[in-house]
Every structure is written in C-alpha cells, then in structure tokens.
Image (cartoon, rainbow, N blue to C red; front, side, top):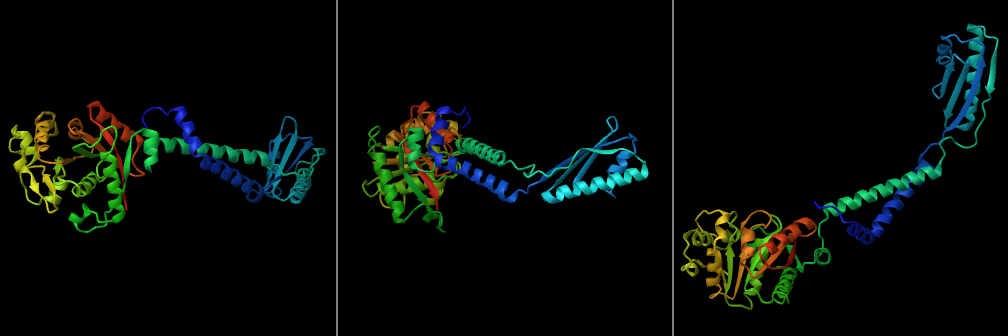
Length: 397
C-alpha cells in the first residue's frame, strides 16, 4: 500500500495471524535456549594483579613475550602504578586457573632474571569462579525473544504492503466488493483455440456460479452489457469472457462478444481468423448504421463476435459517443453483450468502457493481486459512473 498503514488494520491483521506471530516468537525463544544451553561454550575468566618495583617501558615486551604468554591470556602494564594486570579466559575452568598461575610463575622468573626486580607482589590473587563469565541465560533468551518480535514486525509490515488476496472471503471482508467466484485457469492445452474453451467440469461448475452471482446481483440485476477487465495484463480476462459466453449461450439464443483489446486482439484471433472490419472501423467512421453487418458468426452456436477491426486508432477515440451509440444499436439484436478489454490499470480505453457497460467484472490473479491494484481499479470505475458487479479470482493450474 502506498498510503500510511492504519493502526486498526495492523491490529486486525495481528489478531488474524496471531498463531503465526506467537509461533515466530516461540521458535526464536527456543532457538535462544538451544544456543545458550547447548551451542554456546562457557568461558571462565580469571584475573590477577601484580605489583613490581620497576617501571621500565621494555617490561611490557617481557610480559607479552611468546615465551611465557599463551593465546588465552591478556596482560597489560601500567608504568605509573607499576601494576601488571592479567586476564585469562578459557572454556575449561580448572585450566583457566592453572594457566594463570603458570604464567605468573614464568613472569616472575623472567623479570627477576632480566630486570633483577626485588618486589613481585600479587595484590589480586587468581581465583576460580564457579560460574562462567559469559553465562547469562536470561539475557540470551530475552535477546532471542526480541529478535522474534523484530521478525514479527517485519512480517506484518511486509505482509500488509505486499499482501495478495488469496480467497474470495478476503476480498469481501477487506475491500467490501462482491466476489463472484474463483476459476482455475487451465493453461495446459496445446491448441490456442482450446486454451480459451475449457471442458474441465470443476471450471464449468464455477463459471455457472459466477454467471448466477452476476445476473442475480441485487444491486445490478440482469445486466445486458457486461465488461471484463483485468487488474493487470495477463490475468485471463479473455479466457473468462469466452468461457462465460459459452455458459450464456446455453440459456440465450444470441450472445455477442465485443473485442476491444486493440493491442492484443486476443479473442478476435481465436474466434475469427480472418482480418475484417470491426470496432475500430465503426469508431473512426462516425457511422454506426452498419454495425450489425460487421458482427461475425463463430463456430459455437448462439455466439457471435464483433472483432477489433482493421483501422488503427488511439484509445482516446473511445471518448466519443460512437461506442455508446454502437452498443445501444447492438443491444436491439442480442440478448447478452460481453465486452473484452485490456487491463483497467494499463490505459484509458477500459475506463471509457466502464462508463458505457451496465456491469463491470474485474479479473484478478489469486494470491498475487495487491489490494491497492483492486482499490485503484474500483476507484477508476466508480469515478466515471461505472458499476462494478464483482471480482473473479483467476488462478493458473
């Protein structure tokens, strides 16, 4: 979403996904416990301080000499106070104490030999601590829980911003738009003709449900002209248009498909192989008298098509009243008119047509369409006085 996220919406989303959110924190806490109790190696720290009677700068070289010091030991010398500080950190607590004592013995011997020091006083005796210096179970687990909460926050923000509508219930609950149904787009056919005519029984059943929801809508019952447009390119609006035409043809004798997808001419190419005049020629000629003469029969009984046409025109040409007048004339000869067009978020043409059609059906890809795309399409339809009858979720199988 481009707009700011509503706190109420976030709370609602968190409640709906509470099991996932709790699970993320619980898993993080468990991982934290596994790390602190099993993976993390305890470190035992031993410290000591030694007072000497000389402050020669070269003494520091002796106390850090590889001859007497080990990797686990850190030694520093303060020339002002003449104090040598020793820190030893080893995972074995007995070894930590023994290593420190061995270092002190070697150091004393070396300093007496090289600098002939008389005073070597241990002012902080090395002691063995029973608890590891890095042993802080509560802190480790709290850090893990905080990481889990951070992951939850990221999940919520990403989910709300990139959320795809996965089912019809989410559409009606979140967007308050009627969900007409879900169709599994059968794209496994090899023949182009077959791609747009489904014989799958489950798809046929769902198409009947969509048809019933569309025609029995209390807000817009029995529309004669129905526009089909996608929320984006390639979501299958032509597929839905063609297959719903098959359903309408079972109960009506004259069904007309108008192909206004002037860029792709999808249904024109599928149902009418030859190049012939059509919509664009009517719009450009300003003459609608012969519009019925341009309608072509298809191979399917009771279904006719008005193809895109030969004339090249821009989308802005549809802003004139020619299209409205042409459809009014066609309505006298056909029971149902289905208009296939490009994505409403891609150009001006679909917006023009929504103001003409009695009903508009949005086609969206299940699980991938964003709420903002649906809301944008809804706004554009309603801004020009169009009537959105609902949404069909199309899912590739």
